[in-house]
Amino acid sequence: IAAFFAPKVLAGQSVLITAGPTFEAIDPVRGITNLSSGKMGFAIASAARAAGANVTLVAGPVHLATPRGVRRINVQSAEQMLQAVQSQIEHASIFIATAAVADWRPASSADEKIKKDGSGDVPALAFVENPDILATVAKLPRAQNGELYCVGFAAESHDLLQHATVKRVRKGVPLLVGNIGPATFGQDDNALLLVDANGYRELPRASKAHLGRQLVTELARRLPGAQT
Ligand code: CTP
Ligand code: CA
Image 1 (cartoon, rainbow, N blue to C red):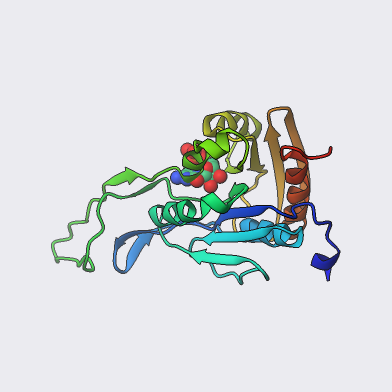
Image 2 (cartoon, rainbow, N blue to C red):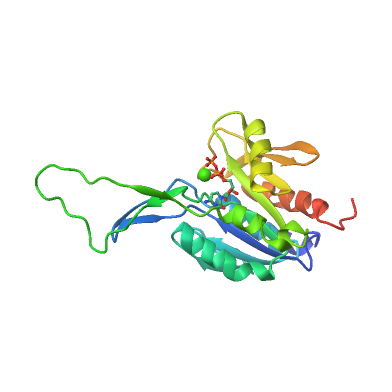
């Protein structure tokens, strides 16, 4: 019902969203991941769909139902997430990176389960850096010339405004959204800080569903050619 009455501010837009954590394998039964629930990204996907957009969600391992009318591609690792994004990005006019992508992955993953050898020795993990999906997309010519509008997210433990301002420029995106602490992983509500070239604006604590709708409104206003 709510979706039926939502203003169609994203009609004609194709939105690609990453959400959830990534899972980086150590061996077939173990890996490293993080506490991202994917709820914020799924809420934005739902709001974007209700606003008339065509929506594709690239989701890491999360236990969430796919929002109605949204196309979903499931992935595990950052490399798979990048691949899925690259396979869909040419159709997108908006890219929203909410995923908590693992910054590093084990340099190699064992084909068989690593066993204790009885000596008490522990395995040593070496890491390599994962590709930066948002930065990769933001460098595409279509992002540079304004045909593809990119939105980043940031979870910081301190100095959110300062970090978000620097991160927006470093990633080369027009809009960066900070999660206002304390840590919101898994919670149903959140508060957001929107940072763009003109300054910042706070969306006060509310349900992620409500914030998703507000963010869609804010986003639509910032699109090239928007009325206000
Ligand atoms: N991101 C991404 N791919 C990565 C890392 C981050 O697409 N490998 C995206 C996230 O989805 C988010 C934004 O980049 O939209 C910022 O992520 P964040 O982890 O806050 O920034 P990093 O650049 O990874 O820096 P750091 O974790 O050191 O603060
Ligand atoms: Ca990171």
